[in-house]
Amino acid sequence: MNLYDLLQSQKDLNITINAGQLIEVIDYAVSRRETPQQRPTAKKNTYGIKELAERTGYSVATIYSKVHKRKIPFHKSPNGSKLMFYEREIMEWLEGNIPPTPAEVAEEKLRKFSERRAK
Picture (spheres, rainbow, N blue to C red):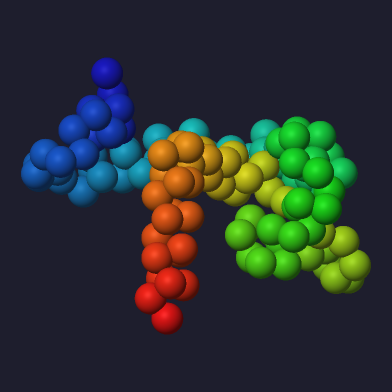
């Protein structure tokens, strides 16, 4: 195990290293960095609205509604004419966008009903 891997595995550990070791770790980390040729192209990591609808199962109209309400992460193309969705952001959003259980839905409806009645 090299010093870089050791430091990665012990992130909470307070240690002292000398300048030479620090340079070694930095050089190793820089050598592992992706070059522009290794990075995936933006085309592979972005979806248009139709492709997003196919991948998520939402209808195009639902996606437009979520964009309008700012309930889904989105970007506009450089000329502003098209919506773009970044795969990583969508995956994170989907993971955090867990649908409510039937009990939660019923509880929310009851709460709203009670609020209306109290007015």
